[in-house]
Length: 157
Ligand SMILES: [Zn+2]
Image (cartoon, rainbow, N blue to C red; front, side):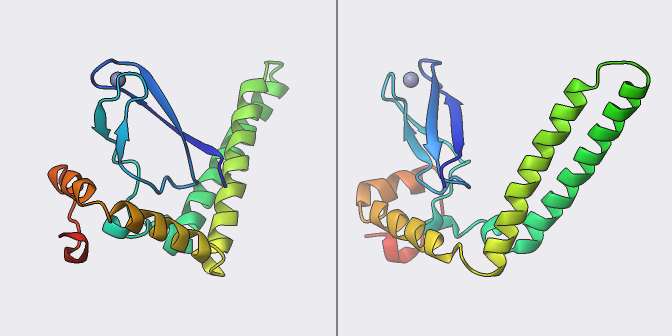
């Protein structure tokens, strides 16, 4: 599933980089600026073989909590929208905000179901394979260690 983008500003040239990512940003935290090619660490990415899977990928309860929170936001937004409407004011912004929260809530409830019935396991295995592939490169492992990642012994040569 590729819905997400991560954006970061290059610390050297200041240009904005935009990367397509899988749902929860599993991939290498070591990025290269596409404009000046400098190297940079973006800790929003998860190197799964080093850091393990994220809670959101293993614990359906986390997704459910976020879902409930988003549904509350939807209810509050639409409540405000309704109050503005009966006051003769424009409720549009609140309606849109509520709808947005609802869409994200649906995304998280789907994630909770997938984690609960294990249908995200193949995906995680795939990310693990890709991660282990990257860790085959000793130079890459050294970089991770340099940036403070606790790389498991088995990848250190
Ligand atoms: Zn740059």
